[in-house]
Image 1 (cartoon, one colour):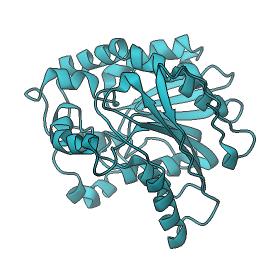
Image 2: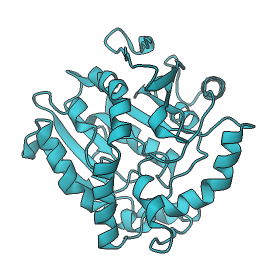
Image 3: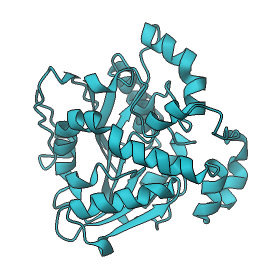
Image 4: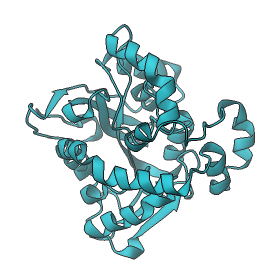
Length: 320
């Protein structure tokens, strides 16, 4: 099937062709004109359009931090305290990324972080193989347009091969788990990045350790399900992007209200948050992105056979 980012201009296009035996694609395109972000009418229009195109949604096993943690059980994991009531004090600490990291995501045992990083590197290959065609076409839109790229939730670096092989690319890889670093470095080298052009930073997406308007693109795949504050993360994405910069995303989203899938998600969501590092099964992530104030946005939807209950995914590009 053919998908086009027509609202972002002829320089941006997605044309993935993948066997329907591997993935069932439901085309969803939400295009929003460049209307001031503070316009109430535009916010309502974006939200309504996004909700109208969200389709049947579902989620479960291949989110940014699902895989290993579900298997390890809850006994070894601290349950994070509520963050909503702590936002005022959080704002004063925002200039200290490590302080914010420790507050939002308390330290896990060393062996656990290492084991999870190892499992994430080895056990998500079927999923990565199925979504490869979509990622390849999505990230190809950055070629020649983005030289400084920040990836939130870089993990073991599965996305680097899609966008980091252009000459002159500099990548900042952000992840709260420091044990991801050695895997991400290997992936960066395999992608053709010089060591001096890849920086791994231990931090959370709610407090990105880079300057305002300093990067050409932000990449995030299967991240917004697990962050403590989605809106704050998206504000950070917009803060660090240069004017006209790109936010490239792939996320799993909640099922439609009233469906059996949505009912199951609601039942399992509290357990999922405990065992999967805060991953939520019921987030309407597409709506959050639509309301974040980007000037242009295109969202597409796909159902992946290897993602099991984590279906569908949304993916696309937003522009500051």
